[in-house]
Amino acid sequence: MIVSQNRRLKVLTFFLFMIAALIFIPDSFVRAFGAEADAQVQAEAQVQSEDQPVELPAQAQVSTPPVIRITSVGVVGNEHITSEYILNVVEAKPGASLDREAIQADVQAIYEQGFFSFVDVDVRPEGGGASVMFSVQENPVIESINFQGNTLYTTEQLMHDVFSLEGTVFNRVFFRNDLDRIQEHYHQDGYVMVRVADVQIQGGNIYVTILEPRVGDIIIQGNQKTKTYVIRREIKIDKGDIFNITHFRHDLGKLQGLGYFEDVNVAFDVPEDNDSVVDLILTVKEKRTASIGLNLAYGTESGISGGLTYSDTNLFGRGLNFEVGFNEGREANYWTTLASPYMDKSTYSWRVGVRYRKYEDRYYYYKARKQFEYDEKSFSVFAGVGKKFSNEDWSWFLTLRHENMDYSHIHNAIPGYIDDLTPWDGTNQTVELSLTWDKRDPYVSYPKGFIWDTNLEQAVEFIGGEYDYLKYWTQARFYIPLNRLVEGVIDMNGTWTADNPLLLAARLRLGSATQTNLPSFARYSLGGMNTLRGYNSRSFEGSNMYLGNFELRVPVASAVTIVGFYDIGNADEKFDWSNHHDDYGVGVRVKTPFGNLRVDYAKGGEENKTYFGFGEMF
Image (cartoon, rainbow, N blue to C red; front, top):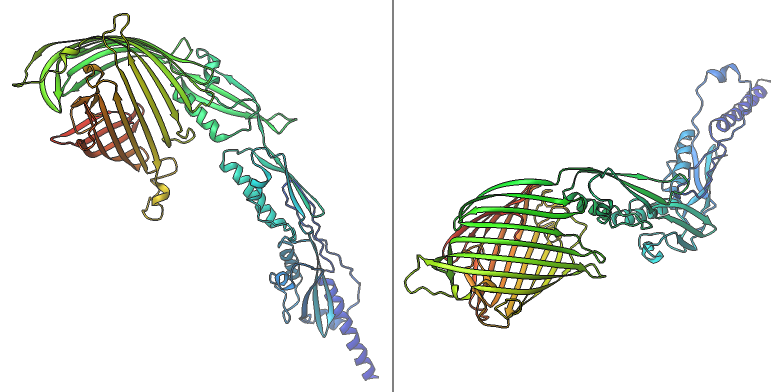
Protein backbone atom coordinates (compact mmCIF):
# COMPACT_ATOMS: atom_id res chain seq x y z
CA MET A 1 0.00 0.00 0.00
CA ILE A 2 2.81 2.40 0.83
CA VAL A 3 4.56 1.52 -2.46
CA SER A 4 1.39 2.25 -4.41
CA GLN A 5 1.00 5.63 -2.75
CA ASN A 6 4.64 6.57 -3.53
CA ARG A 7 4.18 5.62 -7.14
CA ARG A 8 1.04 7.74 -7.44
CA LEU A 9 2.87 10.64 -5.79
CA LYS A 10 5.71 10.46 -8.34
CA VAL A 11 3.25 10.44 -11.24
CA LEU A 12 1.37 13.38 -9.76
CA THR A 13 4.63 15.32 -9.26
CA PHE A 14 5.69 14.76 -12.92
CA PHE A 15 2.37 16.08 -14.23
CA LEU A 16 2.60 19.09 -11.91
CA PHE A 17 6.03 19.97 -13.36
CA MET A 18 4.68 19.77 -16.91
CA ILE A 19 1.67 21.90 -16.03
CA ALA A 20 4.03 24.51 -14.50
CA ALA A 21 6.08 24.56 -17.71
CA LEU A 22 2.97 25.12 -19.79
CA ILE A 23 1.89 27.94 -17.48
CA PHE A 24 5.20 29.88 -17.54
CA ILE A 25 6.33 29.24 -21.15
CA PRO A 26 4.31 30.95 -23.94
CA ASP A 27 2.66 28.57 -26.32
CA SER A 28 2.75 30.94 -29.36
CA PHE A 29 4.55 34.09 -30.50
CA VAL A 30 3.12 35.56 -33.70
CA ARG A 31 4.57 38.29 -35.78
CA ALA A 32 2.63 39.75 -38.68
CA PHE A 33 4.28 41.90 -41.33
CA GLY A 34 2.30 44.42 -43.40
CA ALA A 35 3.64 47.05 -45.81
CA GLU A 36 3.28 50.56 -44.41
CA ALA A 37 4.09 54.00 -45.96
CA ASP A 38 7.56 54.11 -44.47
CA ALA A 39 8.27 50.39 -45.00
CA GLN A 40 8.47 49.94 -41.25
CA VAL A 41 6.11 47.29 -39.84
CA GLN A 42 5.50 46.94 -36.13
CA ALA A 43 5.31 43.34 -34.87
CA GLU A 44 2.83 42.23 -32.32
CA ALA A 45 3.35 39.06 -30.33
CA GLN A 46 0.32 37.26 -29.06
CA VAL A 47 0.88 34.87 -26.20
CA GLN A 48 -1.73 32.24 -25.54
CA SER A 49 -1.78 29.81 -22.63
CA GLU A 50 -4.41 27.71 -20.86
CA ASP A 51 -4.33 27.69 -17.07
CA GLN A 52 -5.36 24.37 -15.64
CA PRO A 53 -6.68 24.63 -12.10
CA VAL A 54 -4.83 22.05 -10.03
CA GLU A 55 -5.10 21.32 -6.34
CA LEU A 56 -1.53 21.13 -5.16
CA PRO A 57 -0.62 19.05 -2.15
CA ALA A 58 0.58 21.00 0.83
CA GLN A 59 4.15 19.88 0.35
CA ALA A 60 4.11 21.08 -3.38
CA GLN A 61 3.05 24.63 -2.40
CA VAL A 62 6.04 25.17 -0.18
CA SER A 63 8.73 23.35 -2.20
CA THR A 64 11.10 25.17 -4.71
CA PRO A 65 10.06 24.58 -8.37
CA PRO A 66 12.64 22.49 -10.21
CA VAL A 67 14.81 24.08 -12.99
CA ILE A 68 13.83 22.92 -16.48
CA ARG A 69 16.78 22.65 -18.88
CA ILE A 70 16.67 23.18 -22.63
CA THR A 71 17.56 19.95 -24.39
CA SER A 72 17.54 21.19 -28.01
CA VAL A 73 16.99 24.37 -30.09
CA GLY A 74 15.93 24.41 -33.76
CA VAL A 75 14.23 26.33 -36.57
CA VAL A 76 11.56 25.25 -39.03
CA GLY A 77 9.97 27.04 -41.99
CA ASN A 78 13.12 28.68 -43.36
CA GLU A 79 13.92 28.05 -47.02
CA HIS A 80 16.61 30.60 -47.93
CA ILE A 81 17.90 31.89 -44.61
CA THR A 82 20.12 29.34 -42.88
CA SER A 83 19.28 28.06 -39.42
CA GLU A 84 22.77 29.01 -38.23
CA TYR A 85 22.16 32.65 -39.23
CA ILE A 86 18.80 32.70 -37.44
CA LEU A 87 19.98 31.02 -34.25
CA ASN A 88 23.02 33.27 -34.07
CA VAL A 89 20.86 35.96 -32.42
CA VAL A 90 19.08 33.82 -29.83
CA GLU A 91 20.16 33.25 -26.25
CA ALA A 92 18.43 29.86 -25.88
CA LYS A 93 21.09 27.13 -25.96
CA PRO A 94 21.00 23.42 -25.06
CA GLY A 95 21.72 23.07 -21.36
CA ALA A 96 20.50 26.56 -20.49
CA SER A 97 17.59 26.98 -18.12
CA LEU A 98 14.18 27.57 -19.66
CA ASP A 99 13.06 31.19 -19.10
CA ARG A 100 9.86 32.75 -20.38
CA GLU A 101 11.23 36.30 -20.83
CA ALA A 102 14.41 35.04 -22.51
CA ILE A 103 12.39 33.00 -25.05
CA GLN A 104 10.23 36.05 -25.78
CA ALA A 105 13.36 38.17 -26.36
CA ASP A 106 14.69 35.49 -28.74
CA VAL A 107 11.49 35.65 -30.79
CA GLN A 108 11.86 39.43 -31.01
CA ALA A 109 15.53 39.15 -31.99
CA ILE A 110 14.70 36.74 -34.85
CA TYR A 111 11.94 39.06 -36.05
CA GLU A 112 14.26 42.07 -35.95
CA GLN A 113 16.57 40.34 -38.41
CA GLY A 114 14.07 41.62 -40.96
CA PHE A 115 13.69 38.53 -43.14
CA PHE A 116 10.47 37.17 -41.61
CA SER A 117 6.79 38.06 -41.58
CA PHE A 118 5.91 35.49 -38.90
CA VAL A 119 7.82 34.09 -35.92
CA ASP A 120 6.45 31.45 -33.54
CA VAL A 121 7.94 29.22 -30.86
CA ASP A 122 6.97 25.75 -29.69
CA VAL A 123 8.21 24.38 -26.33
CA ARG A 124 7.72 20.66 -25.67
CA PRO A 125 8.91 18.12 -23.10
CA GLU A 126 11.96 16.24 -24.27
CA GLY A 127 14.26 13.83 -22.44
CA GLY A 128 13.60 15.14 -18.95
CA GLY A 129 13.78 18.76 -20.15
CA ALA A 130 12.24 20.86 -22.94
CA SER A 131 12.90 21.40 -26.63
CA VAL A 132 12.60 24.92 -28.13
CA MET A 133 11.59 25.04 -31.79
CA PHE A 134 11.29 28.42 -33.54
CA SER A 135 8.91 28.53 -36.49
CA VAL A 136 9.44 31.26 -39.12
CA GLN A 137 7.80 32.41 -42.32
CA GLU A 138 10.14 34.17 -44.72
CA ASN A 139 9.32 37.36 -46.60
CA PRO A 140 8.89 36.95 -50.36
CA VAL A 141 11.88 36.90 -52.69
CA ILE A 142 12.33 40.28 -54.41
CA GLU A 143 11.29 40.14 -58.06
CA SER A 144 11.38 43.89 -58.83
CA ILE A 145 11.75 47.31 -57.17
CA ASN A 146 9.68 50.03 -58.81
CA PHE A 147 9.66 53.80 -58.16
CA GLN A 148 6.87 56.17 -58.98
CA GLY A 149 6.52 59.93 -58.54
CA ASN A 150 10.25 60.52 -59.09
CA THR A 151 11.04 63.20 -61.68
CA LEU A 152 14.36 64.60 -60.45
CA TYR A 153 16.20 61.29 -60.69
CA THR A 154 15.56 58.26 -62.86
CA THR A 155 14.86 54.83 -61.39
CA GLU A 156 18.37 53.80 -62.46
CA GLN A 157 19.87 56.70 -60.49
CA LEU A 158 17.83 55.89 -57.39
CA MET A 159 18.82 52.22 -57.59
CA HIS A 160 22.44 53.28 -56.95
CA ASP A 161 21.35 53.91 -53.35
CA VAL A 162 19.50 50.57 -53.04
CA PHE A 163 21.49 47.64 -51.70
CA SER A 164 18.54 45.18 -51.74
CA LEU A 165 18.90 42.91 -54.76
CA GLU A 166 16.41 41.09 -56.94
CA GLY A 167 16.45 37.38 -56.22
CA THR A 168 17.10 37.81 -52.50
CA VAL A 169 14.67 37.53 -49.60
CA PHE A 170 13.11 40.89 -48.81
CA ASN A 171 14.54 42.34 -45.61
CA ARG A 172 12.53 45.21 -44.18
CA VAL A 173 15.50 46.46 -42.09
CA PHE A 174 17.82 46.57 -45.09
CA PHE A 175 15.14 48.17 -47.25
CA ARG A 176 14.43 50.82 -44.61
CA ASN A 177 18.12 51.77 -44.85
CA ASP A 178 17.80 51.84 -48.65
CA LEU A 179 14.93 54.31 -48.38
CA ASP A 180 16.91 56.42 -45.90
CA ARG A 181 19.80 56.61 -48.39
CA ILE A 182 17.44 57.66 -51.18
CA GLN A 183 15.94 60.38 -49.02
CA GLU A 184 19.41 61.53 -47.94
CA HIS A 185 20.40 61.73 -51.62
CA TYR A 186 17.55 64.17 -52.23
CA HIS A 187 18.32 66.15 -49.09
CA GLN A 188 22.03 66.52 -49.85
CA ASP A 189 21.08 68.03 -53.21
CA GLY A 190 18.82 70.54 -51.47
CA TYR A 191 15.45 68.83 -51.95
CA VAL A 192 14.74 68.65 -48.22
CA MET A 193 10.96 68.34 -48.55
CA VAL A 194 11.11 65.19 -50.66
CA ARG A 195 10.09 62.04 -48.79
CA VAL A 196 9.04 58.44 -49.30
CA ALA A 197 5.25 58.66 -49.22
CA ASP A 198 4.27 55.02 -49.54
CA VAL A 199 5.60 51.48 -49.94
CA GLN A 200 3.51 48.64 -51.28
CA ILE A 201 4.59 44.99 -51.47
CA GLN A 202 2.69 42.79 -53.85
CA GLY A 203 4.20 39.34 -53.79
CA GLY A 204 7.81 39.84 -54.77
CA ASN A 205 7.19 43.25 -56.38
CA ILE A 206 7.95 46.37 -54.34
CA TYR A 207 6.40 49.72 -55.27
CA VAL A 208 7.88 52.88 -53.74
CA THR A 209 6.10 56.23 -54.09
CA ILE A 210 8.30 59.35 -53.93
CA LEU A 211 6.66 62.66 -53.04
CA GLU A 212 8.48 65.67 -54.55
CA PRO A 213 6.66 68.78 -53.26
CA ARG A 214 6.40 71.63 -55.74
CA VAL A 215 6.20 75.36 -55.16
CA GLY A 216 2.68 76.77 -55.09
CA ASP A 217 2.03 80.46 -54.54
CA ILE A 218 4.90 82.86 -53.78
CA ILE A 219 3.56 85.61 -51.55
CA ILE A 220 5.61 88.78 -50.89
CA GLN A 221 4.54 91.14 -48.14
CA GLY A 222 5.87 93.96 -45.99
CA ASN A 223 7.31 96.04 -48.83
CA GLN A 224 6.01 99.58 -49.13
CA LYS A 225 8.71 101.37 -51.13
CA THR A 226 10.28 98.53 -53.05
CA LYS A 227 8.25 97.34 -56.02
CA THR A 228 7.17 93.72 -55.72
CA TYR A 229 8.68 92.83 -59.10
CA VAL A 230 12.11 94.02 -57.86
CA ILE A 231 11.91 91.45 -55.05
CA ARG A 232 10.29 88.74 -57.14
CA ARG A 233 12.94 88.80 -59.88
CA GLU A 234 15.60 87.86 -57.34
CA ILE A 235 13.67 84.69 -56.43
CA LYS A 236 14.47 82.32 -59.27
CA ILE A 237 12.16 79.57 -58.01
CA ASP A 238 8.90 79.61 -59.95
CA LYS A 239 5.50 78.17 -59.28
CA GLY A 240 5.55 74.48 -60.16
CA ASP A 241 9.28 74.02 -59.49
CA ILE A 242 10.38 71.32 -57.07
CA PHE A 243 11.44 73.16 -53.92
CA ASN A 244 15.20 73.26 -53.39
CA ILE A 245 16.47 74.79 -50.15
CA THR A 246 20.01 75.37 -51.49
CA HIS A 247 18.77 77.40 -54.45
CA PHE A 248 16.26 79.22 -52.29
CA ARG A 249 18.90 80.20 -49.72
CA HIS A 250 21.03 81.57 -52.55
CA ASP A 251 18.10 83.66 -53.78
CA LEU A 252 17.50 84.96 -50.25
CA GLY A 253 21.20 85.79 -49.96
CA LYS A 254 21.05 87.86 -53.13
CA LEU A 255 17.88 89.54 -51.93
CA GLN A 256 19.44 90.48 -48.59
CA GLY A 257 22.64 91.50 -50.36
CA LEU A 258 20.77 94.24 -52.24
CA GLY A 259 20.84 96.28 -49.05
CA TYR A 260 17.16 97.21 -49.28
CA PHE A 261 15.96 95.32 -46.20
CA GLU A 262 16.72 95.03 -42.52
CA ASP A 263 15.28 91.55 -42.43
CA VAL A 264 13.76 88.91 -44.68
CA ASN A 265 11.63 86.19 -43.09
CA VAL A 266 10.32 83.09 -44.82
CA ALA A 267 7.35 80.91 -43.91
CA PHE A 268 6.01 77.77 -45.57
CA ASP A 269 2.40 76.76 -45.87
CA VAL A 270 1.13 73.38 -47.06
CA PRO A 271 -2.52 73.31 -48.18
CA GLU A 272 -4.61 70.90 -46.12
CA ASP A 273 -5.88 69.00 -49.13
CA ASN A 274 -2.60 68.80 -51.06
CA ASP A 275 0.67 67.82 -49.39
CA SER A 276 2.47 67.84 -52.74
CA VAL A 277 2.44 71.68 -52.82
CA VAL A 278 4.19 74.20 -50.57
CA ASP A 279 3.44 77.94 -50.61
CA LEU A 280 6.29 80.37 -49.90
CA ILE A 281 5.59 83.52 -47.87
CA LEU A 282 8.32 86.20 -47.82
CA THR A 283 7.99 89.01 -45.32
CA VAL A 284 10.47 91.87 -45.72
CA LYS A 285 11.30 94.76 -43.44
CA GLU A 286 12.60 97.70 -45.43
CA LYS A 287 15.33 100.12 -44.43
CA ARG A 288 16.56 103.48 -45.70
CA THR A 289 18.62 103.10 -48.84
CA ALA A 290 19.56 106.76 -49.30
CA SER A 291 22.67 107.99 -47.53
CA ILE A 292 25.15 110.84 -47.37
CA GLY A 293 28.79 109.90 -47.08
CA LEU A 294 31.75 111.94 -45.86
CA ASN A 295 35.17 110.67 -46.81
CA LEU A 296 38.73 111.62 -45.98
CA ALA A 297 41.73 109.85 -47.52
CA TYR A 298 45.48 110.08 -47.87
CA GLY A 299 47.68 108.63 -50.61
CA THR A 300 51.42 108.85 -51.12
CA GLU A 301 50.84 110.23 -54.63
CA SER A 302 47.48 111.97 -54.27
CA GLY A 303 48.03 113.51 -50.83
CA ILE A 304 45.09 114.47 -48.61
CA SER A 305 41.62 114.48 -50.13
CA GLY A 306 38.04 114.52 -48.92
CA GLY A 307 34.50 114.99 -50.09
CA LEU A 308 30.81 114.25 -49.90
CA THR A 309 28.62 111.66 -51.62
CA TYR A 310 24.86 111.26 -51.83
CA SER A 311 23.59 107.89 -52.98
CA ASP A 312 20.44 105.81 -53.14
CA THR A 313 20.72 102.13 -54.00
CA ASN A 314 16.96 101.70 -54.49
CA LEU A 315 15.82 104.89 -56.18
CA PHE A 316 12.01 105.10 -56.49
CA GLY A 317 11.87 101.51 -55.17
CA ARG A 318 12.83 100.23 -58.64
CA GLY A 319 16.30 98.91 -57.82
CA LEU A 320 18.09 101.86 -59.46
CA ASN A 321 21.50 102.98 -58.19
CA PHE A 322 22.00 106.74 -58.11
CA GLU A 323 25.10 108.56 -56.90
CA VAL A 324 26.38 112.13 -57.01
CA GLY A 325 29.50 113.35 -55.24
CA PHE A 326 32.77 115.18 -55.21
CA ASN A 327 36.29 114.90 -53.79
CA GLU A 328 38.64 117.82 -53.29
CA GLY A 329 42.44 117.79 -52.99
CA ARG A 330 45.36 117.25 -55.34
CA GLU A 331 43.06 114.78 -57.07
CA ALA A 332 39.62 116.35 -57.41
CA ASN A 333 36.63 114.45 -58.77
CA TYR A 334 33.03 115.40 -59.52
CA TRP A 335 30.61 112.77 -60.76
CA THR A 336 27.07 111.50 -61.06
CA THR A 337 25.87 108.08 -62.18
CA LEU A 338 22.55 106.30 -62.60
CA ALA A 339 22.37 102.55 -63.19
CA SER A 340 20.01 99.61 -63.25
CA PRO A 341 22.41 96.75 -62.45
CA TYR A 342 19.99 93.82 -62.63
CA MET A 343 20.03 91.75 -65.81
CA ASP A 344 18.67 88.42 -67.00
CA LYS A 345 17.66 86.95 -70.35
CA SER A 346 14.60 89.23 -70.55
CA THR A 347 15.77 92.29 -68.55
CA TYR A 348 18.35 94.82 -69.75
CA SER A 349 20.92 96.32 -67.43
CA TRP A 350 22.01 99.87 -68.16
CA ARG A 351 24.11 102.70 -66.78
CA VAL A 352 24.84 106.35 -67.61
CA GLY A 353 27.21 108.81 -66.03
CA VAL A 354 29.37 111.88 -66.24
CA ARG A 355 32.69 112.58 -64.51
CA TYR A 356 35.13 115.48 -64.28
CA ARG A 357 38.59 114.92 -62.80
CA LYS A 358 41.41 117.33 -62.02
CA TYR A 359 44.74 115.96 -60.82
CA GLU A 360 47.59 118.28 -59.75
CA ASP A 361 51.23 117.22 -59.41
CA ARG A 362 50.66 113.74 -60.74
CA TYR A 363 53.70 111.49 -61.31
CA TYR A 364 54.52 110.17 -64.76
CA TYR A 365 56.57 106.96 -64.93
CA TYR A 366 58.34 105.55 -67.96
CA LYS A 367 59.48 101.94 -67.58
CA ALA A 368 59.02 102.18 -63.81
CA ARG A 369 61.18 105.32 -63.52
CA LYS A 370 59.67 108.63 -62.49
CA GLN A 371 60.17 111.25 -65.25
CA PHE A 372 58.26 114.33 -64.10
CA GLU A 373 55.14 115.71 -62.47
CA TYR A 374 52.23 117.18 -64.39
CA ASP A 375 48.63 118.40 -64.11
CA GLU A 376 45.78 116.48 -65.68
CA LYS A 377 42.17 117.32 -66.48
CA SER A 378 39.61 114.96 -67.95
CA PHE A 379 35.92 115.03 -68.72
CA SER A 380 33.99 111.91 -69.69
CA VAL A 381 30.43 110.87 -70.44
CA PHE A 382 29.33 107.27 -70.87
CA ALA A 383 26.22 105.18 -71.47
CA GLY A 384 25.94 101.41 -71.59
CA VAL A 385 23.41 98.60 -71.89
CA GLY A 386 23.64 94.84 -71.48
CA LYS A 387 21.69 91.64 -71.14
CA LYS A 388 22.07 87.91 -70.55
CA PHE A 389 21.68 85.37 -73.31
CA SER A 390 19.12 82.55 -73.19
CA ASN A 391 21.92 80.57 -71.53
CA GLU A 392 22.29 82.86 -68.54
CA ASP A 393 25.90 81.85 -67.98
CA TRP A 394 26.64 84.22 -70.87
CA SER A 395 26.07 87.98 -70.96
CA TRP A 396 27.07 91.01 -72.98
CA PHE A 397 27.47 94.74 -72.29
CA LEU A 398 27.97 97.57 -74.76
CA THR A 399 29.36 100.94 -73.61
CA LEU A 400 29.72 104.22 -75.53
CA ARG A 401 32.20 106.68 -74.05
CA HIS A 402 33.24 110.25 -74.84
CA GLU A 403 36.39 111.52 -73.10
CA ASN A 404 38.46 114.64 -73.31
CA MET A 405 41.99 114.66 -71.84
CA ASP A 406 44.26 117.63 -71.15
CA TYR A 407 47.87 117.38 -69.85
CA SER A 408 49.82 120.49 -68.82
CA HIS A 409 52.40 122.07 -66.54
CA ILE A 410 55.33 119.64 -66.66
CA HIS A 411 57.55 120.25 -63.61
CA ASN A 412 60.07 118.55 -61.34
CA ALA A 413 61.39 116.66 -64.35
CA ILE A 414 64.61 114.60 -64.23
CA PRO A 415 67.43 115.54 -66.63
CA GLY A 416 66.80 114.05 -70.07
CA TYR A 417 63.26 113.07 -69.16
CA ILE A 418 61.08 111.22 -71.65
CA ASP A 419 57.69 112.72 -72.41
CA ASP A 420 55.40 110.14 -74.00
CA LEU A 421 52.34 111.61 -72.33
CA THR A 422 51.42 115.18 -73.16
CA PRO A 423 51.43 114.78 -77.00
CA TRP A 424 48.45 112.43 -76.61
CA ASP A 425 45.86 114.72 -75.09
CA GLY A 426 42.65 115.50 -76.96
CA THR A 427 39.25 113.91 -77.50
CA ASN A 428 38.63 110.19 -77.67
CA GLN A 429 35.39 108.35 -78.43
CA THR A 430 35.09 104.61 -78.01
CA VAL A 431 32.67 101.74 -78.37
CA GLU A 432 33.41 98.87 -75.99
CA LEU A 433 31.83 95.43 -76.15
CA SER A 434 32.29 92.98 -73.28
CA LEU A 435 31.34 89.28 -73.32
CA THR A 436 31.27 87.32 -70.08
CA TRP A 437 31.03 83.59 -69.40
CA ASP A 438 30.39 83.06 -65.70
CA LYS A 439 30.67 79.46 -64.46
CA ARG A 440 31.08 80.23 -60.79
CA ASP A 441 28.93 78.16 -58.46
CA PRO A 442 26.10 80.48 -57.37
CA TYR A 443 25.06 78.27 -54.47
CA VAL A 444 28.14 78.51 -52.24
CA SER A 445 29.22 81.34 -49.96
CA TYR A 446 32.68 81.72 -51.53
CA PRO A 447 33.88 82.04 -55.16
CA LYS A 448 34.16 78.63 -56.80
CA GLY A 449 34.64 77.89 -60.48
CA PHE A 450 35.78 80.35 -63.14
CA ILE A 451 34.70 83.49 -65.00
CA TRP A 452 36.01 84.53 -68.41
CA ASP A 453 35.79 88.03 -69.96
CA THR A 454 36.62 89.18 -73.47
CA ASN A 455 36.61 92.87 -74.42
CA LEU A 456 36.85 94.83 -77.64
CA GLU A 457 37.37 98.61 -77.60
CA GLN A 458 37.14 100.52 -80.87
CA ALA A 459 38.07 104.22 -80.99
CA VAL A 460 36.16 106.09 -83.71
CA GLU A 461 36.78 109.41 -85.45
CA PHE A 462 33.34 110.90 -85.65
CA ILE A 463 31.58 113.64 -83.75
CA GLY A 464 34.90 115.05 -82.64
CA GLY A 465 36.94 111.89 -82.04
CA GLU A 466 40.66 112.25 -82.79
CA TYR A 467 41.85 108.63 -82.59
CA ASP A 468 41.25 105.39 -84.42
CA TYR A 469 42.52 102.14 -82.89
CA LEU A 470 41.27 98.73 -81.75
CA LYS A 471 42.17 97.21 -78.41
CA TYR A 472 41.28 93.65 -77.42
CA TRP A 473 41.96 91.81 -74.22
CA THR A 474 40.77 88.77 -72.36
CA GLN A 475 41.06 87.51 -68.81
CA ALA A 476 40.11 84.40 -66.86
CA ARG A 477 39.70 84.07 -63.11
CA PHE A 478 39.83 80.71 -61.37
CA TYR A 479 38.77 79.79 -57.83
CA ILE A 480 39.69 76.28 -56.67
CA PRO A 481 38.96 74.98 -53.13
CA LEU A 482 41.76 72.75 -51.83
CA ASN A 483 40.20 71.12 -48.76
CA ARG A 484 39.99 67.69 -50.37
CA LEU A 485 43.62 67.78 -51.46
CA VAL A 486 44.96 68.51 -47.98
CA GLU A 487 42.44 66.49 -45.98
CA GLY A 488 44.34 63.87 -44.03
CA VAL A 489 47.67 65.56 -44.82
CA ILE A 490 47.21 68.81 -42.90
CA ASP A 491 45.16 69.10 -39.71
CA MET A 492 42.46 71.60 -40.68
CA ASN A 493 41.29 71.79 -37.05
CA GLY A 494 37.79 72.81 -38.17
CA THR A 495 38.98 76.15 -39.60
CA TRP A 496 38.83 75.24 -43.27
CA THR A 497 35.17 74.33 -43.59
CA ALA A 498 32.96 73.59 -46.58
CA ASP A 499 31.75 77.23 -46.45
CA ASN A 500 35.18 78.75 -45.77
CA PRO A 501 37.80 76.54 -47.47
CA LEU A 502 41.47 76.82 -48.25
CA LEU A 503 41.28 78.49 -51.67
CA LEU A 504 43.60 78.92 -54.65
CA ALA A 505 42.66 81.99 -56.70
CA ALA A 506 44.28 82.96 -59.99
CA ARG A 507 43.79 85.65 -62.62
CA LEU A 508 45.34 85.56 -66.10
CA ARG A 509 45.04 88.59 -68.39
CA LEU A 510 46.29 89.14 -71.92
CA GLY A 511 45.82 92.21 -74.13
CA SER A 512 46.98 93.76 -77.39
CA ALA A 513 46.04 96.40 -79.96
CA THR A 514 46.17 97.10 -83.68
CA GLN A 515 48.64 99.95 -83.14
CA THR A 516 52.05 99.98 -81.54
CA ASN A 517 51.66 103.53 -80.26
CA LEU A 518 48.44 104.06 -78.36
CA PRO A 519 47.42 107.35 -76.75
CA SER A 520 48.66 107.46 -73.18
CA PHE A 521 45.14 107.30 -71.72
CA ALA A 522 44.38 104.17 -73.80
CA ARG A 523 47.52 102.18 -73.03
CA TYR A 524 47.53 99.10 -70.90
CA SER A 525 48.93 100.04 -67.52
CA LEU A 526 50.39 97.85 -64.77
CA GLY A 527 51.48 98.73 -61.25
CA GLY A 528 49.62 99.47 -58.06
CA MET A 529 47.34 97.63 -55.66
CA ASN A 530 45.18 95.99 -58.35
CA THR A 531 47.81 94.66 -60.80
CA LEU A 532 51.49 94.47 -59.79
CA ARG A 533 51.44 95.20 -56.08
CA GLY A 534 55.20 95.67 -55.71
CA TYR A 535 55.33 98.71 -58.05
CA ASN A 536 53.95 102.22 -58.32
CA SER A 537 50.76 102.93 -60.21
CA ARG A 538 51.26 103.07 -64.02
CA SER A 539 54.88 101.94 -63.75
CA PHE A 540 54.63 99.95 -66.99
CA GLU A 541 52.56 100.98 -70.01
CA GLY A 542 52.20 99.88 -73.59
CA SER A 543 49.99 98.53 -76.35
CA ASN A 544 50.59 94.94 -75.27
CA MET A 545 50.16 93.43 -71.84
CA TYR A 546 50.19 90.18 -69.92
CA LEU A 547 49.50 89.68 -66.23
CA GLY A 548 49.23 86.81 -63.79
CA ASN A 549 48.04 87.08 -60.20
CA PHE A 550 48.08 84.09 -57.86
CA GLU A 551 46.74 83.97 -54.31
CA LEU A 552 46.53 81.24 -51.69
CA ARG A 553 43.76 82.28 -49.32
CA VAL A 554 44.14 80.57 -45.94
CA PRO A 555 41.32 81.03 -43.38
CA VAL A 556 42.67 81.30 -39.83
CA ALA A 557 39.33 82.24 -38.23
CA SER A 558 35.74 82.63 -39.37
CA ALA A 559 36.32 86.33 -40.21
CA VAL A 560 40.09 86.42 -40.86
CA THR A 561 42.04 85.10 -43.85
CA ILE A 562 45.78 85.22 -44.51
CA VAL A 563 46.77 85.55 -48.18
CA GLY A 564 50.07 84.67 -49.76
CA PHE A 565 50.41 86.10 -53.27
CA TYR A 566 52.63 86.30 -56.33
CA ASP A 567 52.20 88.74 -59.26
CA ILE A 568 53.97 88.67 -62.62
CA GLY A 569 53.53 90.63 -65.84
CA ASN A 570 54.56 93.46 -68.10
CA ALA A 571 53.11 96.15 -70.37
CA ASP A 572 55.17 97.39 -73.33
CA GLU A 573 55.06 98.25 -77.01
CA LYS A 574 55.67 94.62 -77.91
CA PHE A 575 55.33 91.21 -76.33
CA ASP A 576 58.50 90.04 -74.64
CA TRP A 577 57.78 87.14 -72.33
CA SER A 578 61.34 87.12 -71.03
CA ASN A 579 61.10 90.75 -69.90
CA HIS A 580 58.74 90.52 -66.98
CA HIS A 581 58.32 92.11 -63.57
CA ASP A 582 57.15 90.29 -60.50
CA ASP A 583 56.49 90.68 -56.81
CA TYR A 584 55.38 88.59 -53.88
CA GLY A 585 53.99 89.24 -50.45
CA VAL A 586 51.41 88.54 -47.80
CA GLY A 587 48.04 90.05 -47.01
CA VAL A 588 45.22 89.95 -44.49
CA ARG A 589 41.48 89.97 -45.15
CA VAL A 590 39.06 90.80 -42.33
CA LYS A 591 35.31 90.53 -42.79
CA THR A 592 33.55 93.69 -41.62
CA PRO A 593 30.00 95.06 -42.03
CA PHE A 594 31.39 97.24 -44.84
CA GLY A 595 32.98 94.34 -46.74
CA ASN A 596 36.37 92.68 -46.65
CA LEU A 597 39.06 94.93 -45.21
CA ARG A 598 42.18 94.29 -47.28
CA VAL A 599 45.81 94.88 -46.29
CA ASP A 600 48.62 93.79 -48.65
CA TYR A 601 52.39 94.03 -48.16
CA ALA A 602 54.35 93.40 -51.38
CA LYS A 603 58.05 93.17 -52.14
CA GLY A 604 58.76 94.42 -55.65
CA GLY A 605 61.84 94.96 -57.77
CA GLU A 606 63.26 97.95 -55.89
CA GLU A 607 61.03 98.73 -52.93
CA ASN A 608 58.25 97.38 -50.75
CA LYS A 609 54.64 98.55 -50.91
CA THR A 610 51.76 98.46 -48.43
CA TYR A 611 48.14 98.89 -49.50
CA PHE A 612 44.88 99.33 -47.62
CA GLY A 613 41.44 98.95 -49.15
CA PHE A 614 38.17 97.02 -49.25
CA GLY A 615 37.25 93.96 -51.28
CA GLU A 616 39.36 91.31 -52.97
CA MET A 617 41.81 92.15 -55.73
CA PHE A 618 39.86 89.88 -58.10
